[in-house]
Image (tube, rainbow, N blue to C red; front, side, top):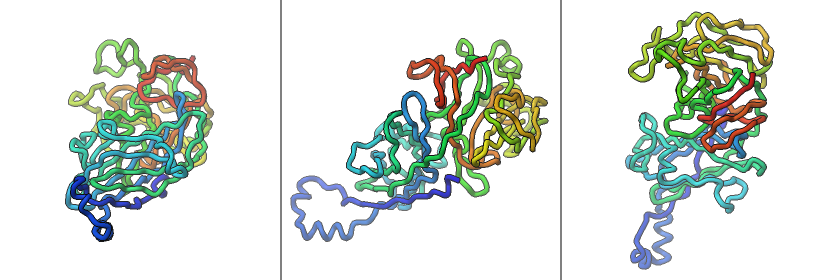
Length: 382
């Protein structure tokens, strides 16, 4: 479990900011006295889940979260964050986040607005930074990451955390055909509800959806043709779902009705959504090595497998639907380190082969052993 790897901040506080004329009047004795009485910045910093690098689009990507909790009774301004190779502290930072780039990845716990508008951590509050650090694909991946935080009038230097060097699962395609969009796939956009998918269950805070993808079909910019409230109008509805690896079926639940399509205030689920049915009709596969594949929102009556059965990679296990918390037909696919719904930590993986037909960068073509990123349009082949 990622949450077993907790790191806490080592604090290095600077003196309160002063203008040049004031500094000129300070004697060495004054400076020593002030340094001795300086108070550490009362911000606790921790990274509950150290990252595992995954390859995509010419880089190794490191996705993880940094939690900053203010234990003082006054706001503390966060100015910038440097991510540093923990074994090369004097080298150029791997990444620096400041200004709008910092606000874009920040969220104050309890707020539905991403970013702290005044750049501060409120008294007693926690600011979460959803970090994405890129390392050149053929370059060495640091063994450890350190973080230098400019907070208030001081600097917090966190103890270096180890990068997890877990072996990435090489998995097969979950669907066949073209025009599949990796909706809310791995990415750092503020409106990515998977990347921001922090959830507390049984007292544990995790993000099982960190690398989740909602696979749906898009043609001419739309995911449907005809009545936008009818599930059958959506191109993905009823398409077969494939086992992404040789696996043991641990959970298989059917019997939940498909929802009429609708977003926002127009969402009217066929049954009240609860923690027990949020995934709707679903299947959980044991991929081995403590990794589990979760398929959510399957079509009512389509689940073809039962707990205890073994499936082969590429075998049809059911069909795409709109059950549970689905606003429109799609399959929500995530790999985690636990069997339960919305528990445990989301884990990266790679898909053996696919073709990118559209991407935010404009790069298209065949890919092997990579993970699609948010918004990519994918052809999985026939």
